[in-house]
Length: 568
Image (tube, rainbow, N blue to C red; front, side, top):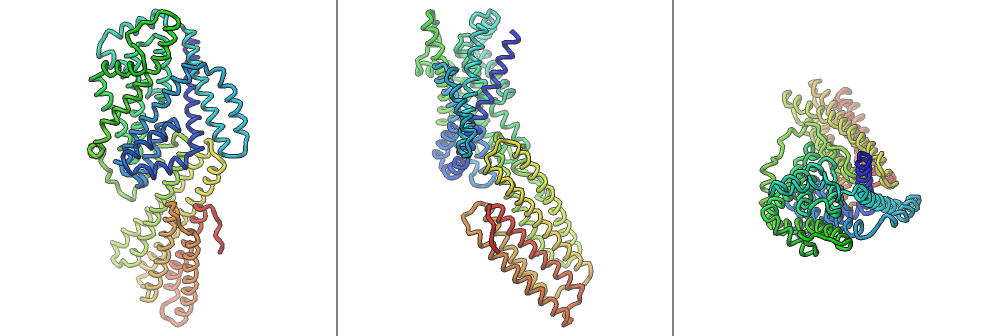
């Protein structure tokens, strides 16, 4: 018996691995297209609903869809009210998994068909074309999933659960507790899903138990309802250390499913009986012959899958009209943190690697954008520092710039460490090359932070010397800093993936270089003409030279992000 249980655990692991691999393969194959669809087709609630449904059905992972949706909310591409319909659609799309299992895993014996798929998968994995490799990974996942499902069924048959008195008596005794039976299995389904972290795996076990005749349909459906809540608890726990918007989206997912469970419990038996009648299954019918037993074992899987779909469809039909009130409730429950902006905290990758390496890469890119935006903010402190003459105000702003420089160093290290972890996952050659460019991006962005800090140090040395720049020096520094600000603004547009001519970055850099050369020559003439002393000229050129270095770093960031080499 212990060996049988261990075998079932192994089969379940095989099923979960297959689901994960299949999802990863599809996301690699269509990840960029799916992200484009999510970002452009979710402006209306119906479009968002359909997008969430079809994307989730395609990648066989509601988690992947939810993660991408939350990413767009964090990036400001979607509001929370636009994201909620996508999450609702993801709940509908995830029901496709149960139908795939019911139709192919129970109606047909897939154990004889998976081996050719394994052969096809290994052939595709040795091809050089990235799309073929990703498709091969999908085929492998598909094969493992059905191999796991088939071995689970075979193991259940070998255990002969339908004649096991202990198991039969347990379910029979539980069945006499009325509503408490439903609640017990609801909690059991939630706990199991939280432990396994895969609603699809628990759904597979439920399908097998019900099809073998051991688990009554009502108790099986209670497990399905629990699975819907369990999968949201997992996402909420994962979002605890994430941003406010991520936690709000996770809470929206939970509220959606909890609300559905509550109203279904009120009309539990009538609703279940209605779904059973639609798929042609009679919950009260006791099959006698082998043919009737075989037919009932297939129909009961349809009933479970049908309930899963009907539950989510009805829930969406009820809640789709109340998105704005839902958003208000969620925002009241999870209020935005009033954190100090100078505190170091990664916004997008603080909760660890995501379900796939490709999604993690997408999150890292958004973190790089956040890093660049923070560095731009740091740079804009420097012109303000230049204009301050009050010692206390000067010291406060200089200390703030110093703190930003430390944050810049930490962000570079944290993002680099994250990218190194992503590299250990399954990535296409294109994604590996992209990581190398992202590494260069963060290094150059950190160098921009260093240049900003060096400017502020030069200004600080001037301030402590009790001497001051001339009006012309102030005007020249303001002008070259304005050119740097223009170059950094353009760099941000490139990082934001806007359709821009990156050669403009080269024009900005040349403008900074030419002006620096002009100021360098003029500085020598002004010192010679005794317009100011040599020491003040050194402080002045330290600021100017660091502006020129900043321009070089900006060019490097643009090149790394655009994967090109600009010709000087």
